[in-house]
Image 1 (cartoon, rainbow, N blue to C red):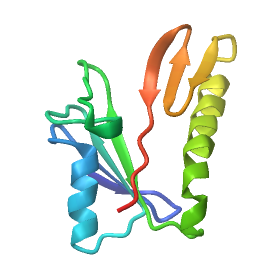
Image 2: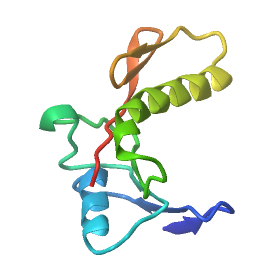
Image 3: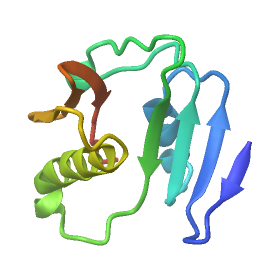
Length: 123
């Protein structure tokens, strides 16, 4: 399924993919620049930091956002913090009474349990 947002960003949802990150890499290799959300209800070869396996349970959603940055490459390390704080703020709006924490550099915890892991890659 493919949809387009008013902002121009597209979203493609798949039942199963090997990895949303790998799909983004394949798309970038053939010239895709986004903005594009790649979403999978199931991943068979997801991965996290340093190539560690990413376990996706039933009901989890995996997503990768492919875009061409409009900022200097040397600011990229800051993007990880900005992304984590953005997710922190978004979760707080939906669950204002929850204990939300950022476990640096890339995990979001709610009431002590991990709900998200962020992985930023420069392609």
